[in-house]
Length: 127
Image (cartoon, rainbow, N blue to C red; front, side):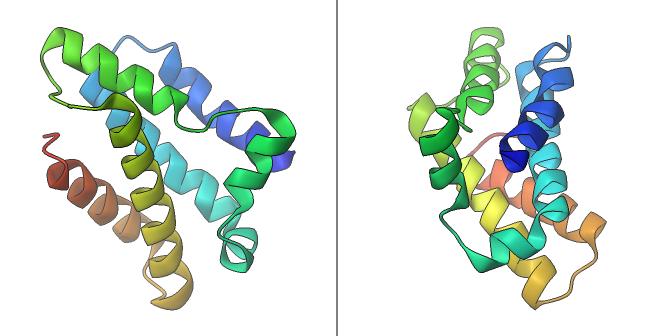
């Protein structure tokens, strides 16, 4: 599935990076916005596409985010109570808010990306 391949491709350089967990988490969420941007018509048409992709590919889209959260917790840059829950919250909050602002409010991609990622990271206490 093209969406899954794009997501994996966007995450790979971040997964192999050497930055802190928090920095890589931010980079991953920005990359998620990039994948959403390339697939706006599809994401506007259905809010279940990532669930459908998971069923077809068995790819869990929150796994990279969970890894960055755990790494950040180990190094002290992140304080999360429930890694799986926080990763799901981050993924969905960023993906769907970004998609909505781009498609229905016609925000510029860079503006939407920066404001959404900053807000979500601050909102869950990840600075």
